[in-house]
Length: 170
Image (cartoon, rainbow, N blue to C red):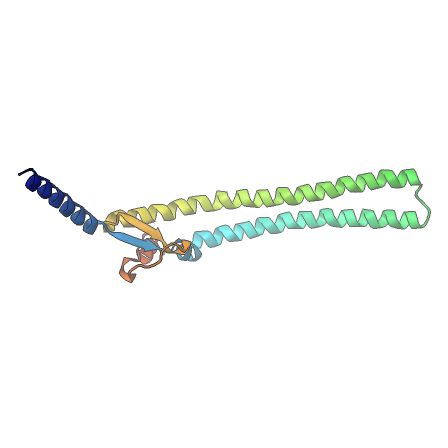
């Protein structure tokens, strides 16, 4: 009798698992494809390029001033218009300018990275919200991102990329 109860319990548990597994719905999307087509990303990239151009222009001006000073010093030294003490002092100034240029380049990269994060983060959040909304509306328990390269196989009808794009007004 206890064996019968035990088998009944195992059978009921197995059936519950089978129904639960069949009820789960999986979908996938390509966040990269969405982001490439999203106008907000294109605007953010344009703003980043503008900022990068401004920063590069300033950096190039710093380098140009440095090179001009260096060439002027070399010319004055070659003409014998600079003493050894003056040469050493001016070389220290030039070395300081070199350090400022290197520091500026590092600051520029950090500034660009921070600006990119500032511009892109709200867009990523909006895309994620659209994915969440489509998944909830369509009854998906899991949605995978095809652009990560982890998705090995999926049915084409489970691709929700177009639905996410529609949700974003694309």
